[in-house]
Image (cartoon, rainbow, N blue to C red; front, side, top):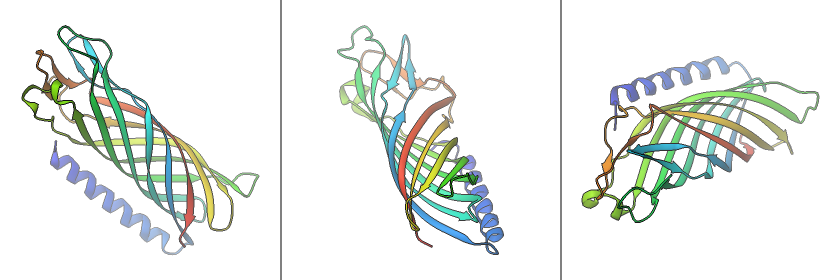
Length: 225
Protein backbone atom coordinates (compact mmCIF):
# COMPACT_ATOMS: atom_id res chain seq x y z
CA UNK A 1 0.00 0.00 0.00
CA UNK A 2 1.15 3.54 -0.69
CA UNK A 3 1.88 6.06 2.05
CA UNK A 4 0.86 4.02 5.12
CA UNK A 5 1.53 7.00 7.42
CA UNK A 6 -1.07 9.04 5.54
CA UNK A 7 -3.58 6.19 5.85
CA UNK A 8 -2.94 5.92 9.60
CA UNK A 9 -3.43 9.67 9.98
CA UNK A 10 -6.77 9.49 8.20
CA UNK A 11 -7.81 6.56 10.41
CA UNK A 12 -6.92 8.53 13.54
CA UNK A 13 -8.86 11.55 12.31
CA UNK A 14 -11.86 9.41 11.42
CA UNK A 15 -11.92 7.79 14.86
CA UNK A 16 -11.61 11.17 16.58
CA UNK A 17 -14.40 12.75 14.55
CA UNK A 18 -16.65 9.74 15.06
CA UNK A 19 -16.17 9.69 18.83
CA UNK A 20 -16.79 13.42 19.06
CA UNK A 21 -19.97 13.17 17.01
CA UNK A 22 -21.30 10.30 19.11
CA UNK A 23 -20.60 12.24 22.31
CA UNK A 24 -22.51 15.27 21.03
CA UNK A 25 -25.44 13.09 19.98
CA UNK A 26 -25.89 11.30 23.30
CA UNK A 27 -28.20 13.96 24.66
CA UNK A 28 -30.33 14.00 21.49
CA UNK A 29 -32.72 11.62 19.79
CA UNK A 30 -30.64 9.41 17.48
CA UNK A 31 -32.06 7.35 14.61
CA UNK A 32 -29.98 4.48 13.20
CA UNK A 33 -30.57 3.37 9.60
CA UNK A 34 -29.13 0.69 7.36
CA UNK A 35 -29.26 1.43 3.60
CA UNK A 36 -28.34 -1.16 0.95
CA UNK A 37 -28.11 0.58 -2.43
CA UNK A 38 -27.28 0.16 -6.10
CA UNK A 39 -26.87 2.57 -8.97
CA UNK A 40 -24.86 3.87 -11.91
CA UNK A 41 -21.10 4.44 -11.80
CA UNK A 42 -19.70 7.20 -14.03
CA UNK A 43 -16.04 6.35 -14.66
CA UNK A 44 -13.12 8.22 -16.22
CA UNK A 45 -9.55 7.56 -17.47
CA UNK A 46 -7.46 5.98 -14.70
CA UNK A 47 -4.24 4.93 -16.47
CA UNK A 48 -2.25 6.13 -19.47
CA UNK A 49 0.66 5.07 -21.66
CA UNK A 50 2.57 6.64 -24.52
CA UNK A 51 0.01 7.70 -27.11
CA UNK A 52 -3.10 6.31 -25.38
CA UNK A 53 -5.19 6.32 -22.21
CA UNK A 54 -6.96 3.47 -20.44
CA UNK A 55 -10.68 4.19 -20.31
CA UNK A 56 -12.88 2.70 -17.60
CA UNK A 57 -16.43 1.91 -18.72
CA UNK A 58 -19.47 3.20 -16.84
CA UNK A 59 -21.00 0.37 -14.87
CA UNK A 60 -22.95 -0.64 -11.77
CA UNK A 61 -22.11 0.61 -8.26
CA UNK A 62 -23.49 -1.05 -5.14
CA UNK A 63 -22.91 -1.14 -1.40
CA UNK A 64 -24.36 -0.20 1.96
CA UNK A 65 -24.48 2.61 4.52
CA UNK A 66 -24.97 2.73 8.27
CA UNK A 67 -26.31 6.18 9.23
CA UNK A 68 -26.77 7.87 12.62
CA UNK A 69 -29.13 10.88 12.43
CA UNK A 70 -29.84 13.37 15.21
CA UNK A 71 -33.24 15.12 15.19
CA UNK A 72 -33.44 14.80 11.37
CA UNK A 73 -30.89 17.59 11.01
CA UNK A 74 -27.40 16.09 11.15
CA UNK A 75 -26.14 12.68 10.09
CA UNK A 76 -22.94 10.68 10.45
CA UNK A 77 -22.55 7.56 8.34
CA UNK A 78 -20.14 4.79 7.46
CA UNK A 79 -20.37 3.61 3.85
CA UNK A 80 -18.98 0.97 1.52
CA UNK A 81 -19.21 1.22 -2.28
CA UNK A 82 -18.03 -1.36 -4.82
CA UNK A 83 -17.48 -0.63 -8.52
CA UNK A 84 -16.07 -2.69 -11.39
CA UNK A 85 -15.34 -1.46 -14.90
CA UNK A 86 -14.05 -2.92 -18.15
CA UNK A 87 -10.74 -1.29 -19.06
CA UNK A 88 -9.96 -0.50 -22.70
CA UNK A 89 -7.43 1.59 -24.60
CA UNK A 90 -8.90 4.58 -26.39
CA UNK A 91 -6.95 3.52 -29.50
CA UNK A 92 -4.97 0.53 -30.70
CA UNK A 93 -1.19 0.92 -30.47
CA UNK A 94 1.38 -0.65 -32.76
CA UNK A 95 1.70 -4.39 -32.17
CA UNK A 96 -1.26 -4.74 -29.80
CA UNK A 97 -3.95 -7.26 -30.85
CA UNK A 98 -6.96 -5.39 -29.40
CA UNK A 99 -7.94 -2.48 -27.16
CA UNK A 100 -9.49 -4.52 -24.34
CA UNK A 101 -6.97 -5.00 -21.52
CA UNK A 102 -8.97 -6.21 -18.48
CA UNK A 103 -11.06 -4.97 -15.56
CA UNK A 104 -10.54 -2.54 -12.69
CA UNK A 105 -12.45 -2.80 -9.40
CA UNK A 106 -12.59 -0.21 -6.62
CA UNK A 107 -13.59 -0.70 -2.99
CA UNK A 108 -14.50 2.62 -1.34
CA UNK A 109 -14.76 3.04 2.44
CA UNK A 110 -16.18 6.40 3.55
CA UNK A 111 -17.10 8.44 6.59
CA UNK A 112 -19.78 10.91 5.49
CA UNK A 113 -21.43 13.89 7.15
CA UNK A 114 -25.01 14.80 6.22
CA UNK A 115 -26.90 18.04 6.69
CA UNK A 116 -30.65 17.47 6.33
CA UNK A 117 -33.26 20.17 5.64
CA UNK A 118 -36.95 19.71 6.33
CA UNK A 119 -39.22 20.53 3.39
CA UNK A 120 -42.87 21.56 3.07
CA UNK A 121 -43.70 17.90 2.62
CA UNK A 122 -43.11 16.10 5.95
CA UNK A 123 -42.34 12.86 4.08
CA UNK A 124 -39.54 14.39 1.98
CA UNK A 125 -36.16 15.24 3.54
CA UNK A 126 -33.47 16.72 1.22
CA UNK A 127 -29.82 16.61 2.28
CA UNK A 128 -26.28 17.50 1.29
CA UNK A 129 -23.31 15.36 2.20
CA UNK A 130 -19.53 15.49 2.27
CA UNK A 131 -17.15 12.72 3.26
CA UNK A 132 -13.69 11.24 3.11
CA UNK A 133 -12.14 7.80 3.25
CA UNK A 134 -10.13 5.22 1.34
CA UNK A 135 -10.29 3.63 -2.09
CA UNK A 136 -8.61 0.28 -2.74
CA UNK A 137 -7.79 -0.44 -6.39
CA UNK A 138 -7.93 -3.98 -7.77
CA UNK A 139 -6.48 -4.14 -11.30
CA UNK A 140 -7.20 -7.39 -13.17
CA UNK A 141 -5.25 -7.08 -16.41
CA UNK A 142 -5.46 -9.78 -19.08
CA UNK A 143 -2.37 -11.99 -18.90
CA UNK A 144 -1.42 -11.39 -22.54
CA UNK A 145 -1.24 -7.64 -21.77
CA UNK A 146 1.24 -8.05 -18.90
CA UNK A 147 4.95 -8.55 -19.36
CA UNK A 148 5.94 -11.58 -17.28
CA UNK A 149 2.32 -12.38 -16.39
CA UNK A 150 2.49 -10.69 -12.96
CA UNK A 151 -0.58 -8.60 -12.08
CA UNK A 152 0.08 -4.93 -11.20
CA UNK A 153 -0.15 -4.05 -7.53
CA UNK A 154 -3.31 -2.45 -6.16
CA UNK A 155 -3.12 0.64 -3.97
CA UNK A 156 -4.98 2.07 -1.00
CA UNK A 157 -5.61 5.75 -1.73
CA UNK A 158 -7.19 8.68 0.08
CA UNK A 159 -10.43 9.99 -1.42
CA UNK A 160 -13.21 12.45 -0.67
CA UNK A 161 -16.75 12.87 -1.95
CA UNK A 162 -19.67 15.28 -1.91
CA UNK A 163 -23.25 15.05 -3.09
CA UNK A 164 -26.95 15.86 -2.92
CA UNK A 165 -29.90 13.63 -2.21
CA UNK A 166 -33.33 13.20 -0.70
CA UNK A 167 -35.13 10.75 1.55
CA UNK A 168 -38.77 9.91 0.88
CA UNK A 169 -40.46 8.34 3.90
CA UNK A 170 -42.56 5.36 2.82
CA UNK A 171 -43.49 4.15 6.30
CA UNK A 172 -42.35 4.68 9.87
CA UNK A 173 -39.43 2.29 9.40
CA UNK A 174 -38.62 2.46 5.65
CA UNK A 175 -37.58 5.34 3.39
CA UNK A 176 -36.48 5.59 -0.23
CA UNK A 177 -33.09 7.30 -0.47
CA UNK A 178 -31.96 8.82 -3.80
CA UNK A 179 -28.70 10.67 -4.36
CA UNK A 180 -25.90 11.70 -6.65
CA UNK A 181 -22.32 12.20 -5.60
CA UNK A 182 -18.92 13.08 -7.03
CA UNK A 183 -15.84 11.25 -5.82
CA UNK A 184 -12.18 12.34 -6.09
CA UNK A 185 -9.37 9.85 -5.42
CA UNK A 186 -5.70 10.68 -5.00
CA UNK A 187 -3.42 8.30 -6.90
CA UNK A 188 -0.91 8.62 -4.03
CA UNK A 189 2.10 8.00 -6.26
CA UNK A 190 3.84 10.11 -8.89
CA UNK A 191 2.21 9.86 -12.30
CA UNK A 192 5.61 9.20 -13.88
CA UNK A 193 5.99 5.97 -11.88
CA UNK A 194 5.25 2.88 -13.96
CA UNK A 195 2.64 0.38 -12.72
CA UNK A 196 3.10 -2.36 -15.33
CA UNK A 197 4.40 -2.92 -18.85
CA UNK A 198 2.96 -5.00 -21.68
CA UNK A 199 4.84 -7.33 -24.09
CA UNK A 200 4.83 -4.67 -26.82
CA UNK A 201 6.96 -2.24 -24.82
CA UNK A 202 4.25 0.09 -23.51
CA UNK A 203 4.37 0.94 -19.80
CA UNK A 204 1.37 2.26 -17.88
CA UNK A 205 1.00 4.78 -15.07
CA UNK A 206 -1.78 6.78 -13.46
CA UNK A 207 -3.19 9.32 -15.92
CA UNK A 208 -3.15 12.17 -13.38
CA UNK A 209 -2.70 12.90 -9.68
CA UNK A 210 -6.47 12.69 -9.14
CA UNK A 211 -9.14 10.34 -10.42
CA UNK A 212 -12.69 11.74 -10.64
CA UNK A 213 -15.85 9.65 -10.84
CA UNK A 214 -19.58 10.05 -10.27
CA UNK A 215 -22.36 7.93 -8.77
CA UNK A 216 -26.14 7.99 -9.12
CA UNK A 217 -27.83 5.54 -6.79
CA UNK A 218 -30.89 4.64 -4.82
CA UNK A 219 -31.66 2.39 -1.89
CA UNK A 220 -34.05 1.58 0.92
CA UNK A 221 -33.20 3.02 4.33
CA UNK A 222 -34.36 0.64 7.04
CA UNK A 223 -34.65 2.16 10.50
CA UNK A 224 -33.02 0.01 13.18
CA UNK A 225 -33.66 2.38 16.08
